[in-house]
Image 1 (cartoon, protein in one colour):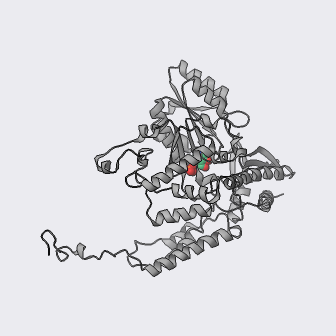
Image 2 (cartoon, rainbow, N blue to C red):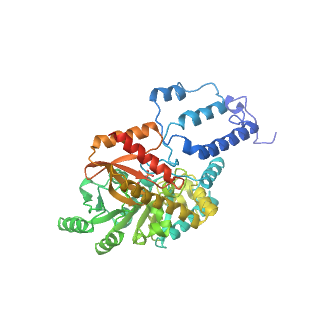
Image 3 (cartoon, rainbow, N blue to C red):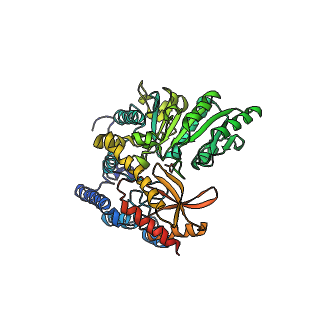
Length: 472
Ligand SMILES: Cc1ncc(COP(=O)(O)O)c(C=O)c1O
């Protein structure tokens, strides 16, 4: 044995543990891996015949998967079947053609493939030195998205886990770059935003909920009044949070007017397009959002309307280096990885992060922009079709017209409780999933139809059930 080399397995039993302690037999890995592919493809093919949502009983789920910490090794194949048949069967299926609740997540196969590959190869996209390939893919995918959305070309981006995290990272950057002060939003702003702002330490007295107009959009005149009042009271107006596609109704705030007010008062315009923003990839959707290019920061969630498996959201901030100015850290233990290229861990609060860009990049390449635009346009058209179907039914009335795939409506002369009961019965049965929401104090039905796999029959059958659940 050479000097400095020695074998002391006998001295420490830990060293006698074989290096293949976690290994799985290669033939088993292949067989189970192929079986997972078969399950996924079967799931996609059979979706219309499966429930759109299913809620299990806590006791039954616990009995199936709980118990003490496992000591004996269990059979992988049967536990995978348990995960697929019991665990993953008891959830909402955002990719289901009759999933119209909250916001759907109609994923597509190229994204699924890339996510599998990234997981299998332990993808990471934190630093250039440790992830030059994934970093390049992320920068390229972000540039494609920025340009196809028609955002300002000095926007730089970062991928995050979802709209909540992307908005909050964007608002941290906004506060860092523009300074602290009053933040303006409305009661139609997504609830994760005030929650995130409070977590950032934004004082309640500097959170200003401004009124909306008759279409539930941010009212520019109410905003101007609120800003003037704040200035008179010695406060500093800092950030306006607009929404491009509200969760409740799909409404798009008047970005042009809000941007003009931001310009006049030297404020930051953040646009939350987590749900609706990706619709701007298509000319039909982009037309609904004039002024999107005026946003100082913008969020959209490809796991909502860009056909991606969970999770992936995208934050863009204007100005080269703005994100790094906000988030860069240079500890000694990362110095070996640093260079003169982008270190993505310096663009948000995340350090170790999977390469979410693989799936977005592969989706753009697999379909090309025109096909993605068609898939988006079908969602917008389905929403408008649903509106016409509702208008044709005497028992129903439109509450807000179809906007970016979302339509809200109500049973004529029906109570809030009747609407809630009808939705609960629909979701319990599982044939379709839909939501109720409350608009101007009234409980209404809400369908969010952005899955291109949805058929006209799916919409009709869902309306039939909502009406028949209302009873006579
Ligand atoms: C407009 C809007 N903003 C933010 C969010 C939060 O996104 P996530 O659930 O991905 O965190 C949502 C979710 O539906 C949304 O519709």
